[in-house]
Amino acid sequence: MVILPTKIVETQPPLVEGETYKIVAAEKFDSAEYGTGLRVTFEDKQKKQYGEVLWVKPSVGSKSKLGAFIATMTHNTDSWIGQYVYVESWKPRARKIKTVKSFEATKK
Image (cartoon, helix red, strand yellow):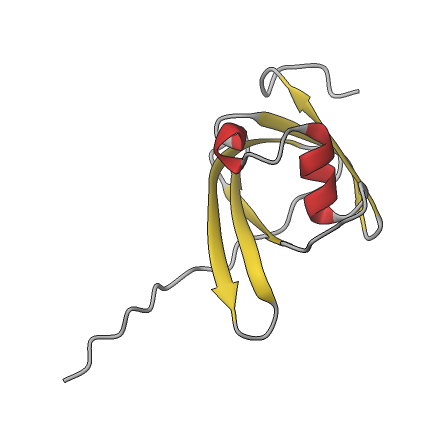
């Protein structure tokens, strides 16, 4: 008998511009096709979960998915947990977030 070390992960909707989210998890994983990734889970005010995969590369632009998070917060993903982020722009190559104190914080 073989016990598979496979974890089932449900697909979560992506982030939406103009919304505030709380980061609840950031898990590193490896993909044979794409390399190392970071699966980040977010919650909105109603506790609905959202997710984004940030692909880890040696260098990234500040407006890429990963770059937007590193530029706004830090390279230490453990410090992201519990942070609130407001998504100013989530268009490819034009991503921008900012940290806020809570869901009630001014969005802009």
